[in-house]
Image (cartoon, rainbow, N blue to C red):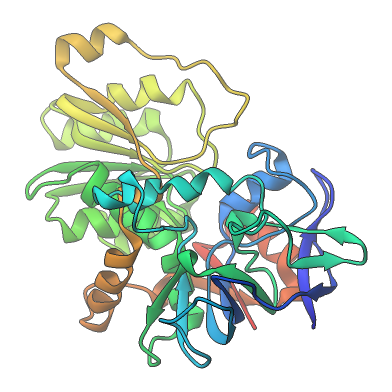
Length: 369
């Protein structure tokens, strides 16, 4: 069939929205008509080359839609079912999945290749050229074919144009606070970078019972939004935050510091540790450039103050458990979801959406189909 998709042909270029050919689903695959797709910063890393995925590629990894067709062997999904995509597929059988770490499923090794998990070939084509898929999903498209391992079935009453954000940003930010940082009631928490992930780390810290939440971002609009989502203090830079946190904690600093910048820098780790209390923890959630190999920090600080630096992928969460859990919190009015969407765009406006993201005008933009 024919459908439209936003393709990145070359690093540093705009997304090209054009008609493509889409094959029917094969064994273990489903055809999904998209309803909504988030404009996540991770797709921008394809443009900059900080994530060296194979090109050409259809962007988008935060998506939700309605199943139109299922391939052979798919017996738990049917046409008409509503699904949210998890940006890392989970098989449920590998050691990581079996031990409760679906975010580290062995199927994740195929993300950068962008082809179907089952046979490593493409279902998406531009003329004679095979197209890869961002995180094996390609949600910047009216329709896509994905493996069933990427699908989480949800109730038909879930607003898919909002719930698509659960495919990455909401779970990643919330889980960074609740799981990776292990925020406890009464903790003081700092979140560095208030975008689509950072704003949800603020939500996660609030729901976990944090005493004080420090939101750090150079954009006033984002700092104001952070207060609406639960932040108690704001700062425009890590340097300013060191003063604010120190004054608010009598010099003890933050128990947990969560890094959710658009692009992490190695020198930020040392600054984050300076904002961290004794026996505190720094969580590195943001992407660093693949070519970056150096980090600036005081190893003596780690030893003498018993501090920790940990990484977190997908918020260290289990999407098949945590996406339904967060939807329940949303239904109960405890999780803000509608308020995350600053602007909506058509597929043709995808480049406009990323311009707004770069200029700091959005918490999160969403493509509505």
